[in-house]
Amino acid sequence: GGGGDAGLAEALLCLAARMPALLDVGSDFCRPLMQLLDWYLLHDAAGLLCGRLLAARAGMLSALLEEAVRSSCADRRGTIAVAGAMHSLLVLAPAHAPLLERPLALVAQAVLQGPCEGQGEGYSELSLATFGGVAGRALLVAPSTFEAALSSAASALGLAQPLPAFCFAWLAVCDGMLLSSQRRLAALALAALLPLEPKALGCLEEVLSLCVSALADEEQPPPSPARSPPPEPVRAAFPHALEPFDSLAAMPLRPALQRSLGVAQEAHGAAFGAAIARVDPALLEQVRAAFGTV
Image 1 (tube, rainbow, N blue to C red):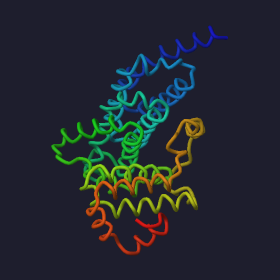
Image 2 (image 1 turned 90 degrees about the vertical axis):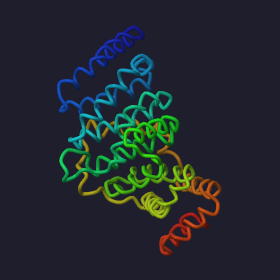
Image 3 (image 1 turned 120 degrees about the horizontal axis):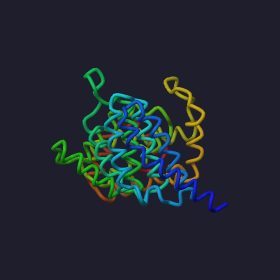
Image 4 (image 1 turned 180 degrees about the vertical axis):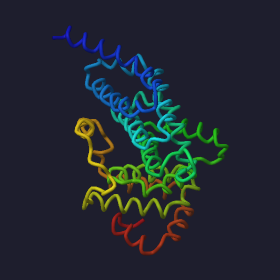
């Protein structure tokens, strides 16, 4: 009954309030804690928690995610779980995206700094590719939050033009995008970034190549990468539960990319034409086959 549901919601919210203490115990708890947060966010969006998780605990969740980003630095699986929780929030409750500003600033800063493999403690290429996807989703569903986070990251690093730097840095770790869904999101986000800054046209060729690859993925999905471990049963169930809420996954890819490229062409005029003229002819032929004239 309603009373039982209310009692369960209250008990779950009390447990949620203890999440930061669990992370304080040690970074080993980061991954299971983020996976637990995924389900909390889903049940909050579905009505079980009556929308009270985010409404009442935004500050706590922001601090929790910020600390989780920091503590997952040396743990690839922890990093992916943190990124997953941030994706979940952006999918399930984009109106609450501002609470991600500080954690997203750390994510953007990590991407801008690049991989540290073989250089001691730091994020791997795979982790940074995953972080790039979180920032890309924020750009598409909560642009003001993305802009504020990128600005904070740029201030911390002393960067004057963070937008093109972010494009190049994310593209530099594209080999870490193991899943077609990651390449799809990256294509949507990077194409949407092109109109925002003329200097972003410096990576036009790489963005076009990614767009062509993402479209090819949709037409003929590749087999699961050998490097990707089989999903755990509980974790495997979550993406299916999240799917009905994900507006970007349902968005037709080709028209969305065509729109972004058209907006970039209008925004930059002759500069866009000059950038297209520098694209490898073989790639340009593939782009025209995929999109028509560009």
